[in-house]
Length: 432
Image: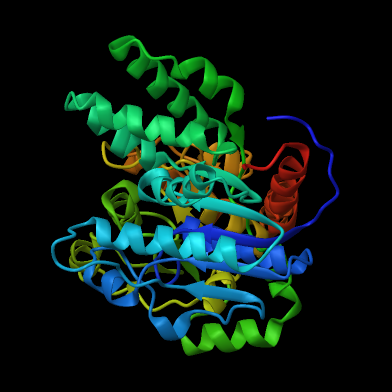
């Protein structure tokens, strides 16, 4: 690609992702990027996702639809229907989405930022649409960004290598590098990707490692920082939300994430049993996911633990702000490793006196900057020590830790993250 230094603005942004109502930080990231695009003056933004009936039939954790905050004017949520009849098996959904993306590229002249979050299965859908323009000789003024998250590597590539299905790993990495700008959500994730490329190279004689090292950039997840930093300016709303939940400010410890084994909720409940906060605070576990029933059964033994699966977008930051401590005891597992920790940064931005308690698993340190209390992943006694530390901290010490945490997390503002992607897009020739 050649440098153009062109000033022709991007007129449309398209993001392909498993979007709302999925409980997933990267679905929230897609929304934030779309909102930032509208704020930046891009006239049209599309979030392309899946039909709701397919999401409801999946095992993915979902938010209640009535808890999703309205999108800004100019943002379109596109859910193209599968294309083809029963003879076309799993390809019906991908064809419907790829075709819809091609329609969007035809619809509006001018330049388009086209980004997929999760390479698998979204990267092939995007590049299929873009390559259809290249092969027919039409110019598609589109700049493609492929964002790799940890599960692309720890799940798809790792399983392909472990099972000896190296062709699948080659296909994913090739698709990734086909994008104009391949990015990873953290330095930790990039290191995983490069290591995966090196593993495939050693087995197949391919040449992925050097390309991945030189071309993959870091694009941290985009967060609506203002939505969190302004919570303290609305004390009446904070008190109303807490009262409706039967909670008091600084009167509860909080977990909020997908309820899955790798998130360490079981460790938190065990640590809660004998910690010094118990008796003066409650523990609320907020989220949904495959381990929810198991966690509900564990929590049923404790009268001071609540499991909430209906916390909406508007409540989330307020509950974070009002907590006495917020915990993400994430631990690495074969099926999942935390590659950033979006909720960690969101809590840091929300402020309040409650510190973040978490681990150094995966990319979490890049989200926290160390402005938190850390325990060894999977170590219940060490997690209990962190809870006891909160019980012993003065309000002044907690406030100072909170201040430093918020200052660090400002770097993840969605406008700044999108701005870097747009800057990159203007430096290179768009795909033709």
